[in-house]
Length: 124
Image 1 (tube, rainbow, N blue to C red):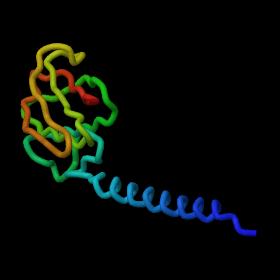
Image 2 (image 1 turned 135 degrees about the horizontal axis):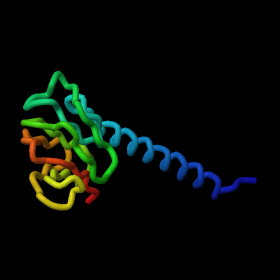
Image 3 (image 1 turned 90 degrees about the horizontal axis):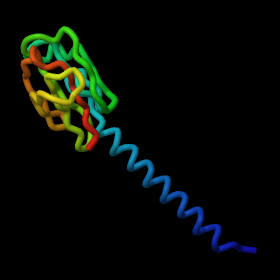
């Protein structure tokens, strides 16, 4: 006895598996480390350069982080994915004294961090 529905289910499973494989491959290709900064992170480098691709600070989760002992110009790289900018503030709790904005996706800027006391990884 043949079960035509079973064959369609098998084809559906194969197509679903192929789509999943294509999604995983595309995600892996877009998840790139840039200058030692893993995909999804915001990284700070000591000085206005890439420091041999060795960031001094890395932040991954969305939210506000206090900065300690960051003086002078530093390179800030936003390697977050999607539309997740990072902002710098003069306050220690990311609420006042806005200083800078860096778009996601590998954008970077050389920023004077002397007045900056906190960095905010924004989930947009």
